[in-house]
Length: 479
Image (cartoon, rainbow, N blue to C red; front, side, top):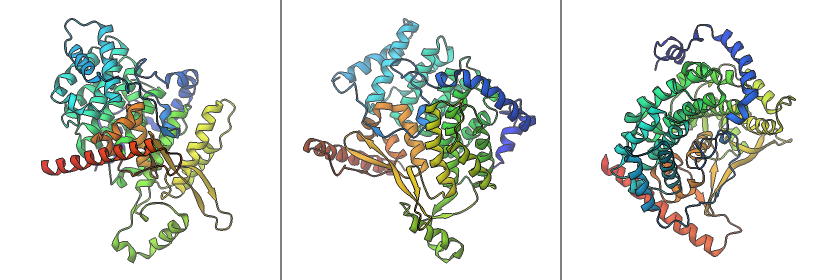
């Protein structure tokens, strides 16, 4: 595969204006970033929920998801199928619509598809809906209509299980990221592009192409898409790059360049940019280790690492190092340690706490890529070995999801950003996109569960397993 730097900085298609002097631009952008980010990054990085406006938040970068047991406001809406049908007709009937009417219809569509698994209700309507959403994005009559339409495309890709969405939506989304006049719309388009790439049928070639596009945005601090030093745009690009990277098994030849680009973003004045970049670095180090194979038993060089994993009590299969994720890990570790203990007066308490907890976990993985995301890590004074508890997330009242690898964490946070309080509904109703993204085990809590909870859990598990079995055999039949 071609060198990433060559693709980014020599390609006439995506080259940024400051590519000719990377070091000079890096110094300049840091100074500029501190001015722009300090004034507005905290407010700009948080957009309202889709009940209010666009529905995109960047706080999901931080390890703050302890439970996905959000209240579902649609529980007492027995007529939601009819409401969805009516809203779809409103969206498709654009001739007599107003901007306000389209915004209300899009908002209702997003609410219904977020809190209900609507694959059957959307059957046959995907091309027409995609065309209608595209018109709202293309005209950009109002920022709110455009962002709601982009979110609708995202939810459509996640719900419809239609492999034609990417090829039909990608040109529009790429153009919107480049040419939209609003940074909010650019940010929404980047998130939407990531979802369509993963769930809309892009394939590995399409995923790698979009990763290069996003890496250009990151390396140029947003300048390649006319969003210079905008922290929301850069954060979105970093988050979606990581989401796409979880689908790529072999990233050895590009790892060095990618880690360097994300290291540069660790100097950002915006904590969301820093944390998202750190998570991608942890993911790249994790990818440099793969499960032990039969012929690895004969390789003496790996025996010490395998024995260390046994002492470390790291869950899952034995992992063996395959390549160096980056040539200067000590330099990277030093930078991560500084962020894990930073105490600058100009940093808010909230950002400081977030940086400390996230970079302590990121550093743990870089030091030993067999260790995934953890809330608590410590060192045994007798053995000098690290130990800690694996990150777990409660989903509804029915079970606990173990997040023991960075790829699971990144996928979970990406899905959580799209579905928000509707995540559990989509999981337990058997959304194929969600189930295929998170092949993790669910288990009942051992304590504190009443009879009704246990019965509900069994029913949900039975439904989920049935849908998973049906989806698997349906795919086999198609092949």
